[in-house]
Length: 506
Image (tube, rainbow, N blue to C red):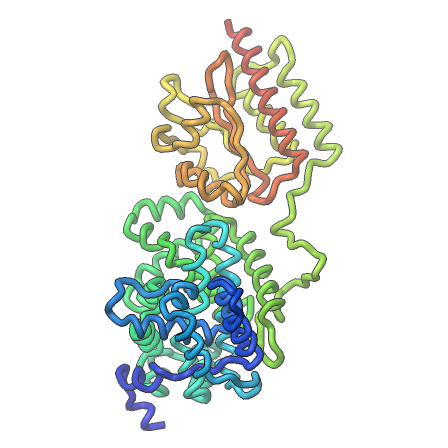
């Protein structure tokens, strides 16, 4: 043990830098078959390798070490790494990699690689659609983020298990335990190995966040704790542009996925899991409840794909059961209005279009309109007034949103999507397929009040002029088609009511 205590970063790099991580024999044989098949494309070869994290590391590490300083950027994906090595050299590398039966591979290494696979599944579930153009970087970066720990778990399994028990599970002081066991801080060692192997840039950025940029991470966590005040969160981020840019960079995705996967090893009810879920909610601008549901669903998906005999997966302790045929509540459409609600909605719409107008003033009219929207199933509603110059918006009425939202105002030239609805009246429906491209065109102060990927936006016109904009959703859930149809009909009734009311005012 004393020899280990005296290690420094350079000594550990020398010890661990070229450790050959073993690959399960069945995975090794499968990759060999695909590699030796002349019909296989680079994508086929990469797909066959991705089920073996150790093989992915060996190939990307070899490609980057071979390139040395001759290439400006390290390989960010397995396909790029294979292309740089060439099929012949990839085959030679594969022949040198130890192929063992799973039971012969140290348990700490198997467990740690399962965490990496779980993290990759979480990253895919949360970000593959949101950041589709960056899918390769997210996929391989999330899988390899913990790779600097793999050779440590392979070469020193007993030390690694003691560190895991004392630091991650018992919560002992990390600095003291790591100095005692390894002579260095584990995160500093991970950072040094990531640099030595020239792992993808996002992996190295993640370790910088955990070592050199911990103050920024702590500030983001403090903001993320206030998930019940999304408008306040956005104001805090707007007040700190450097933190906003730091937190919202794409590299943060793999840190979030791995932080969650590692924390969930201790159980879903521990504070560490909640902190990472809150950060995910802040990053994706989704309700915490929805994020928690999705993390559970992705854990189940990971268990179905990656679970292995004798290796622990966090999905085993999820706080609710989920079967093959059950669709998770977070992905099910919101319930449509009941028969009683529909009857009430019809009465309110009849009131809106009555002639002569029964309303004393515009506030009376819009109040009935908001009731009709609630009756048809909308849970969060904002009615925005357009000024006479059609240059600014201010919130007129809200339902189901933070009280601070009633004080919002914004310039249209800073809200391209809303400006389009003022200039060209119409109705838009945001869904997961178009949310990423369209939601960024809505002011952040307004967008955070409608966390989720489902939203309806509608122009309200009178006498060929847009007077209001209407935003509504069903709590961020996929919308019931009955409610969507009723929303459209309600908007038409509001326009009719405004027309009748304006005539009475004359």
